[in-house]
Image 1 (cartoon, rainbow, N blue to C red):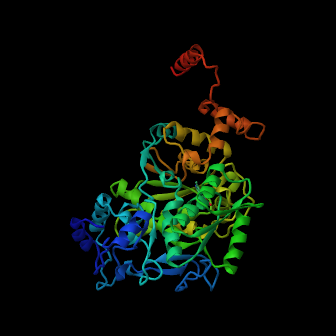
Image 2: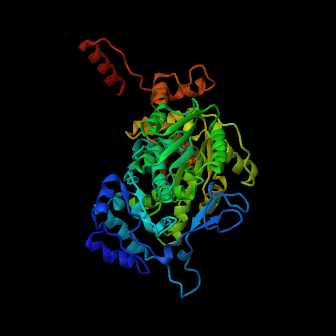
Image 3: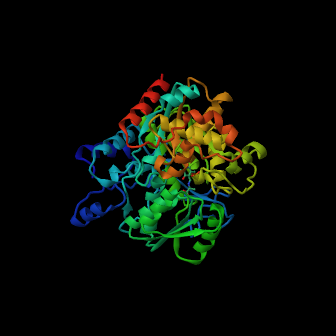
Length: 501
Ligand code: F0G
């Protein structure tokens, strides 16, 4: 609940009358303890959202089962008609940016679960749920609120003075997916769905399973057999999902899921679901707040299905539209060489088409050959003046170890950001004096197999990457197996001390 002192700020922030939300009765209190909460503190005409097709501009009233335009089949997105101030003097901007910033900051001290979520704290920039007249519920695990870390060693190695990592792996299920999942799963809950479903390389499924469990919904997970990490698989099992390992790749799982949602009343939670994108926007809003609303020069994001880059870019454009920031960072997208359909689309075809491919990379989270949101991501790249890059398997592994050595760590897919930054520095696209933020999307412990194999020197043994990997040996810290003998431990310690000089 908003503290009394917050309400005046809130009223200044919103241009029209609001309906404040109060935790007012026992039912609300018990919802609070279960994580199920009434939705909105504020509802204004100005923040009403509509769906729009990104290709033909059609504005359907609902997204249907597959969140695709019924006219042309392309993706839908939310837009907020009331935000556009336009040239019409009688149509004032929806928000006072300064008041909005202080409202969001004040919510950090609130005891309301909605305010404690790093997603719902920014609810003025999120769409309202499908039917505002219903008793609405939000499923929250207090997602978002992720730290922004300096990466001093990485900065020195890359040759930039100002390098930060926004660690989205510090979310409740240890990946950025939670920020979108809280919004989309809440929408499913409010829509009365008994089942939610996704195809996944592991993180979406882990996140969906958790939020479905919290919302008392069943969840169906389709994952490629043998191509996701055990950590992610174990999460979806523990959270109680019906988990199907299909003998295909991620793109094959998506094909089956798209057929399934046409036949069964399951709610689709892949990132074609525009509620996911809206929730994932908040990472960029929170980042700007952490940087005192002074945008960095560059934001670097891994690219898989391209929902996250689309979401962060959408947030940047909307924040500029609402005058929350005065200039746009360049948003660059990095793919693994073995899963680079978007890189090739931009570099070879000028973004005019995307040729699907059979993807292969050890960074299994981004092992995706036919990214659904490529047109959205392209728009963001063009609007912000960002770049697209590809990096090799060895470059990913080395970058991951370097991020680890800064005491942070991440999963392989996240490390493409640092590997990509090195290339963007070499090409001169990123300059040494510029401020750079890497978006780390998943936690180190998501894929311990990869990490252990790298440090033991097994990751590339007997593969074509073995020679390329040789210079990265200095990053390896293989475990030392010894007898339980004090002298043996001291000898190893002394040797390590000598080597560190
Ligand atoms: N990093 C991690 C750790 C991911 O799990 C993903 C995507 C990405 C980056 C790429 O983000 O798809 O929005 O471009 N994982 C999805 C999943 C596909 O099923 O967990 P994207």
